[in-house]
Amino acid sequence: MYYDIFPRIRERRLRRTQKIRDLVAEVSLNKSNLIQPIFVYPGENGIEEIKSMPGIYRMTIDRSLKFIGEGLASGINAYLLFGIPSHKDEMGTEAYDEEGIIPRAVRAIKKEYPDAIVITDVCMCEYTSHGHCGIIVDGKVDNDVTLSYLAKTAVVYAKAGADIVAPSSMMDGQVKAIREALDENNFKETIIMSYSSKFASSLYGPFREAADSKPQFGDRKSYQMDYRSARTALREIELDIKEGADIVMVKPAMFYMDIISKAKEKFLVPIAVYSVSGEYSMIKATAEKGWIDEDQVLLEYMLSLKRAGADMIITYYARRLADLIR
Ligand code: PBG
Ligand code: ZN
Image 1 (cartoon, rainbow, N blue to C red):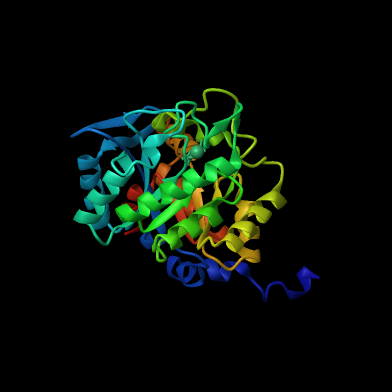
Image 2: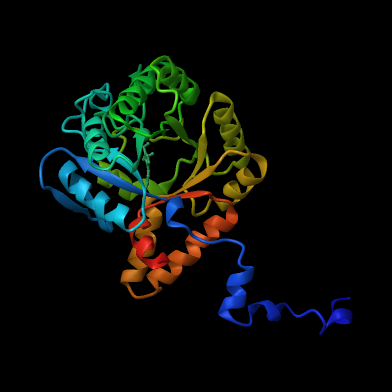
């Protein structure tokens, strides 16, 4: 059958020159869709490279401002903030302290760069001594007790000036609790980008080194999702949309492109994907060995995420991509 039409139909016609290939390309990469995560810690003029993520640093607020300033100049508008607190305790107090690391960083960034899009992760694990994403009651992460702490945290970040809050603890009902608290406190414009579909992945290792947030006992499998099920991920996304999420997220991105593509078909809200720390480290390490071409692999990967359905991409490579895209 195929041979009947050959050679009238020749797929190679559309691949003949670069300009023709560009003409028929279905996806492209825009700097305006990229989000750069950053790790902020207390102090002054401090910068420390994260061992398992060469080229990525933890920075004090003043250094972050410089980094963001340069980023904005190169076209990266959005920053996802993670805080490393000066002290951790059972209740993760510094997460929702108005003088904690994140509210202070947000105020400083918005003062200097009002147009920068500031996104704050809303979770407990960077702030709790036990490293879990919620409040522990009787040895377990208590869902409903945690909700009020997450809501309080989101309000504190919104008050500091965050444009977007991003709940990542995977507690049931977290989006509803946060939306209600934001509205009650008159932060009706604050956007919620929910980590709706967050898997219990081994790819978060380097992040936990960076944020010093490894759980001190057990693991996160009773709240983050089991990677053997795609349908759970779709249910989680659906629930978050019903609860009021403006943007939903799939995380990690690599290994989860089936979820991205199904979510894109099924739902009509913008979809963010998080290319996580372990993905960065894998590409970086292989490139450092000289086994792959870092920039080419990066472009291929990012465009594949777009093809799968990503509207926004959170990536530690955002700044590097800014230079590549131009
Ligand atoms: C907090 C949070 C984590 C990541 C983003 N938000 C860590 C975790 O769940 O252990 C991971 C991001 C990455 O690996 O780049 N819950
Ligand atoms: Zn967490």
